[in-house]
Amino acid sequence: MSTISSKKIDWATTLIPFFIVLGLMAVFMIYPESSKAYVDQLRSFFGDTIGLYYVLLGTGSLAVTLFLACNAKYAHIRLGKTDRPTYGNFAWGTMIFTSTMAADIMFYSLCEWALYGAEPHLSELGTMQMWAPTFTLFHWGPIAWSFYVVLAVCFGFMMHVRKRRRQRFSEACRPLLGKQVDGGLGKLIDIIAIFAIVCATATTFSLATPLLTAALGSVLGFPTTTAITIGVLLLICVTYTTAVLYGVGGISRLATFCSYLFFALLFYFLFLGNETRYIIETGVQSMGNLVQNFIGLSTYLDPLRENGFAQNWTIYYWAYWLVWCIASPFFIALISKGRTIRNTVVGAYGWGIAGTYLSFIILGNYGLAQQLKHGLDVTGYIARGGAMHEAILQIFDTLPLPALALILLVVTMIAFYSTTLDGITYVVSSYTYHNLSADETPSRKVRAFVSIMLILLPIALLFAENSLYSLQSVTIIAAFPVGILLITIVCSFFKDVKAWRREQASPSESEHTVR
Image (cartoon, rainbow, N blue to C red; front, side, top):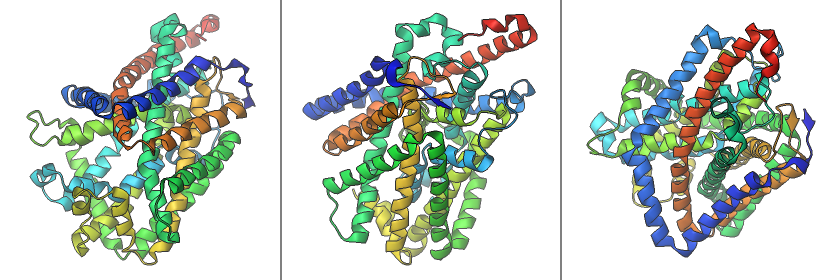
């Protein structure tokens, strides 16, 4: 890949989303009560009143990906004129998992089952043993990953087959919207996209960083302070900035390192925690329960609002995955050059879900064992207002040599956060240019600038506790237009494939490929 200079930067698209987020944070801090009330009303509307919208998006995305993988008309289309994929299966797969939501996955693997334990809906369905681990696999399973996979295929076709020189959401809409993407509408699409990913990044770091700080404090014996938390964030920043400056090759090496750390942590919990049989049996049982009830879980909406479970969890998660699909599918598409659509779909699902399920089954079920077998009341602790990161530390205290396990957790999460931000930084950096082909990479100055901007917002949120919840709500609200863009991009993809086939059948028309 060649590196492109910083002279072709689209400053409006680059800076406006950051300034919007900073402005929202200022409003949340100056007018905390009124702004929170207003945002809560919007969140209730999007998550409750029109919650069906997100459910249809999720099931629809899954259906489209299965159609693409099974229909020979699309399955055999190769993303790029090359017989060999750019990256081998292991390197490709580890980048897919570690550069998406791996850090979030690790954090929630350790405690999400406990959050479900306090839900009345679980008592209605059966026992905590049966349904708490099932819901973790459902909310982080095929439907969640389908948002990534369907867009990765669309972007991969746009970048590697049609070879368009703009790596943006707006460009992916061109087959349907035409020249409108070159004007104000295209600018609006790209601003919405970057705004959503900046919000998602900021809130994710602000939620999970306290666990890293508390873990370090527990091992090294220092109190958890804002200064220490900022230091942890800066360490992550230095790590992922260094990797991203080396391009995709640096990201690949860091992803491979992450995978080894991840497997080491899983080994620790599975074989040294003395719950091997329980973990494996609960995992098998949960997957069987998920398969048996998948359609019912996918369409459950609680029309009478008897428990609010679908609105509080399922719809929330589909919205959260939507805002994250701004960056991750672009990165998956970038590294999938040379693969067929079927291989991209099957491989992305396989590697993504495999890593996710290993994490939730091993880490989550170990904690569940402490709750149900040994009397560690994690669910009650969180329900009484205890922090999730403190509950996670209690789980670690039940392991042999807990300090060693915590060190391994800290190193793994820092590496995972670094690879996740590597992929995001690479994609957002591509957004900053007016034109950028799939064979070109953003300049190092631009990548470094984006790296610093992405870490500044989580640091700012540490000083504004109330704005964190509000910004989370804004992130969920932003998922609504992102869903509309997803539909537009998928429709554009099918239209573009049809046009491409006509051009292949009539070589004289190939010069008219949209650029």
